[in-house]
Image: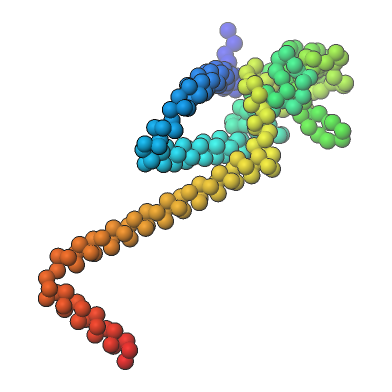
Length: 269
């Protein structure tokens, strides 16, 4: 029995994690539907409950607002970090990454707008017929990426030449590719529709809306909180000082007033 290489073991682990991620996403989607129905059912009662307890209303709104901003910012920041750490335009961590599907040429396997999970590799020994690979592709004079299925392999002088095809396309792709053109291999796991969200976050407007604005709101929110805390601290100091004054004897109060008047006269002179 042939022992698996370290890279093959990591690939197996990644496929397992990606599979769990897909299941978790589907589970979260179901939970979201249930929660939405539940919220809709009790929405009519929320207004009356909050009206009775304004303090609870402010606390709920404050917590929800803060949590939403942190959640959006954390997801967006993670996406941007993955984008900056890329291998030949494939966002990844230690070779395990994702791609957003931009066309319908592989419809039936994954759809336009899906997010697919891949492993970055150009190792000639790991590619077989029916493997789905991502490779460099020139479109309208620009170098981009294409993800299609290997449908044929021909070896010439020790070099493998791969014929590829989109599942939804009637014909094979024009020309052949070699391992040097391949940048990643599809793991078989995807998140339907998530590619559109990733594309938006990585766009200029998406970066502004999902990263810059939440960061600015968090800064303003923390600044306001700091101002409120400082105001309460000064108020507490004033109240404590007032309490201390009330504890003074009449003689002590007269002595303090006398010293204060002397200091004023000294300033005038």
